[in-house]
Length: 148
Image (cartoon, rainbow, N blue to C red; front, side, top):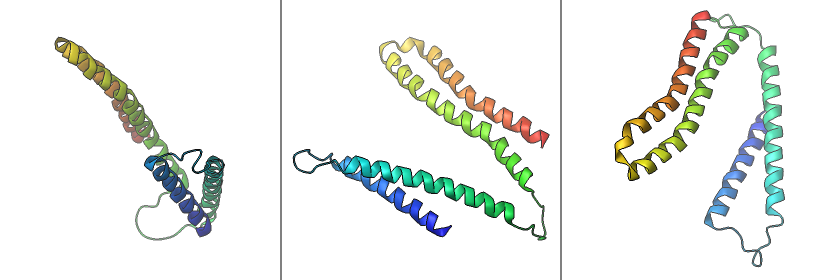
């Protein structure tokens, strides 16, 4: 399992190196041929996703094959742990959605306020509606946590 973690680390380092390489300046076609670069990046991505899938599969096998420990404290079963993760998912996804929604709305609000400062209240309402998405996810998680 450690070799999979090492493989994934090398793939991430490759992605970071490729990003730095393209940030410094894309290669000139006449100076250095990039025919090898895009297939290498695609292969790197394929190896990374395969290693991640294998790591998840092997990790589940190790968790499910582990014996229950009798240490002190509150014991959490696999079902309870998965339920807690499932409870956190609405908050996570709604927060991501709110961030995606607030970005364009905020940019448009600033552009409109530069031309018409008197409609500040309307733009604030639109931003509040976009932020409400995250609050709905938090409320859903709290309600689900009460059911646990």
